[in-house]
Image 1 (tube, rainbow, N blue to C red):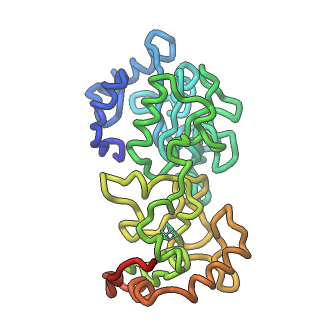
Image 2 (cartoon, rainbow, N blue to C red; image 1 turned 180 degrees about the horizontal axis):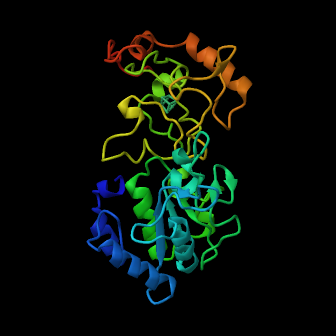
Image 3 (spheres, rainbow, N blue to C red; image 1 turned 135 degrees about the horizontal axis):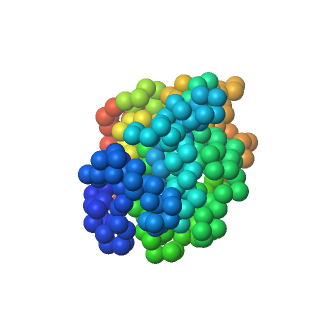
Length: 315
Ligand code: SF4
């Protein structure tokens, strides 16, 4: 659904300009399920080339490792077996979304469906295809993780693959494209000024930073959501919802309510990954002492109460 929202450029124009012919897509193709089965059989026996296999959704292995919980419509074969067969002949394999990459929400809790990702189960390498799986260009499964993914993360990666411009160094240690994971969700967040002064929101509609009380982990989450906006203008933070790090494995089970910040002795546990804790605590208390009244009051309001002071910069 997120990919169908690609609008600049439009999804189909984008694929066409990259020379990508869409063989089948569950929402866009007119082919019946029997035609789809014929196509998949043709691909597996090598009669139809498949350059890029894209999977959305986790792989269902239950019950008892049989995969029979999820059979391909029109066939008695588990979907898991079709995916494995297609992966062996595709030039590249792409997991779209955190479920296909790591198992995601479907693999949460007791995981009765025995769900996993294509090459990971949570943060453990393995999944359906195994840690050692490599495609025809020696690339692992490309994990475009996110719940959901930004449409342009997908299109950009498909473009790179179509032009043979995506190498192992363009992927991070979880095999996610660095074109979006070289950034933090914190980058470009409109609440940055509140963060600097630790002027914190106390309830979801407040304008302040959501880190101290409302569970935001945008300082640790790798994604460019506040730089590459959604539908041209949005992001979770811009909608007043804390970042829950949905591009990471196991994000679905943080061990506490998503919108609560776990703390020890009043200090949030999840501090920025590359900042020494003592420095953070020292800087935070200094910043709090210097918080301008404007930010203090606006942070706990849903509208701007105090505008920035007018004046010339002092020399
Ligand atoms: S709300 Fe989250 S992403 Fe935004 S400034 Fe605060 S910590 Fe950073």
